[in-house]
Length: 340
Image (cartoon, rainbow, N blue to C red; front, side, top):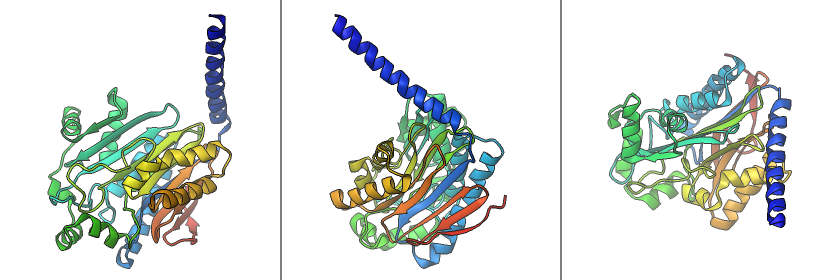
């Protein structure tokens, strides 16, 4: 009995020590806020390149403005992702990809690194901003994820406005669906033989050192009805923990799920790797282990950040200390002064 009691006390002490370490990290992290956003890792065609870069820059600036005025990391990532969901250049909310039946099914997740609170929705059809519904799941229910009809019923019960599904479908996405109603061909064509898709996401650290992530997607074109990828799955499409950082992933959902990419990146950070190295190692592993390509954005509680991808392109933007960084092609980072 004494041995068991001693073990129990030891485990409790370890947990308390880990919690104290995280809290100390948060208290010491009185630093400049940072936000990073992505518009999806895939073979972005030239005719969408400018709109994609402009979109992530605008979303990053919107989220950073909230941080600068004292907003929380959760508020910032929600605002940034909402901006991307409202932009038809991206595959989330308005402009989402269509499934085999020509319908929209949307997924999203949001997570608070301070408390590990998380909310997610999947297969919702008539919600313009799934990320906000995911936040409502996090804050107003005892659950982590709601799906399909249940998510829609919850949205109605709390007064979330619904929209006709057709208003979320763009002419471009409809024409792409009509042209090739085949999942495998659609994936290979869109991503130039690289398994990925154009999810959107954001990660942030606020002035108090708290981190958060949010991810939203319409999924892969011509997916089966009811298919759910990585985006709304905790640890795969996104994860946030004040003890290590926040990550939002983009890529072929099935590949990301198999390696739990977001959590994998953070595990490398916990082992002492830099944010950039952790992201590169994890994406390389996904490519070697399951032949999946994709991308990730990550930020640590100290403000270290990275935007990494193994696809042809990924539209991304980050704001730190009034500098707006952005990019599209590999190894190209541009910057300009942040303007509200």
